Amino acid sequence: MTPPLGSNAAMPSWARLASSSPYDTQINAARARAIVMDQERQLGFEPIDREREKLGYDIESRVPRTDKLRFIEVKGRVTGSKAITVTRNELHTGLDNANDYILALVEFFNNGEYRVYYLYHPFQRELDSEVFSLNYGFAKLIARAMPPG
Image (cartoon, rainbow, N blue to C red):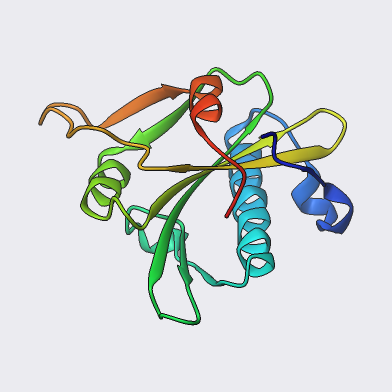
């Protein structure tokens, strides 16, 4: 099932920019986090942005009925992007919290719309000790993902 498209109409103007410079990459990352936090609220969860704490995920989202936590790593890319980079910390956190970890992928389209995908159990194995990060094919991750839920 294809997730619905969202629109940037509700996003602040600073968050609608798209480019490939390091500064714009940070803007797109903030934009993707804001979109996923809004998605989590729509699903009835209570998200907190933890990106600056470098915990191995960007958003901690509480399930109100159970107080269970969802750990969400967010990656936003323009459609057609080749890869996303996952750090050692993100991978280890995902493996250590496999049942509660979500890789949220936000695909930005040239017309200003976007699509959100959730990938549960995104990582399968530990990294070799010499490896600091891994690149994953963006399109292949999207193919394994599903609509948020």
